[in-house]
Length: 115
Image 1 (tube, rainbow, N blue to C red):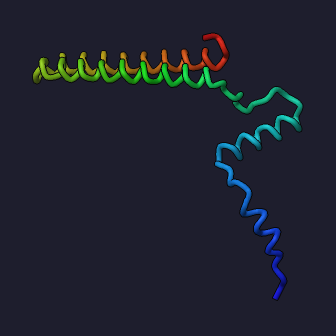
Image 2: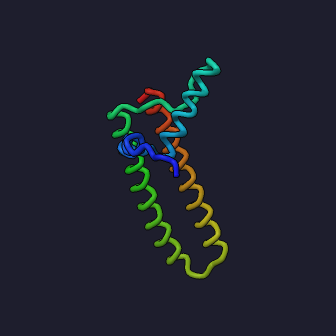
Image 3: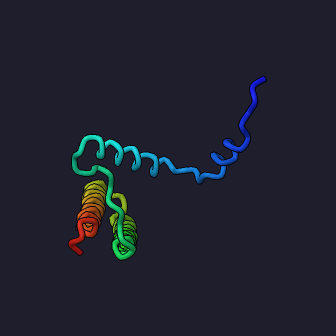
């Protein structure tokens, strides 16, 4: 039976385990260092940027919830008219896509440091 180096094993166990995200970022960073190109790893966000992004997400979530309530109300009012329901559903889908697209643009601006 081989001797097992318990001391080395304990040192390894005391190290903090890394998340898959952290491992991926390390891998990207090491790849970037080897290639000498601009980093492909996402830049770290400042606390102010993180708070602004959270605020944007909360605002968008509130707008989407408000739009859903309006949609349900309009849906009930339309009754069983297939054309009216189709128009309502299309408008609701467009509004959701638009709000989510605006959210994405605003978050990218924050990440680039524009707002």
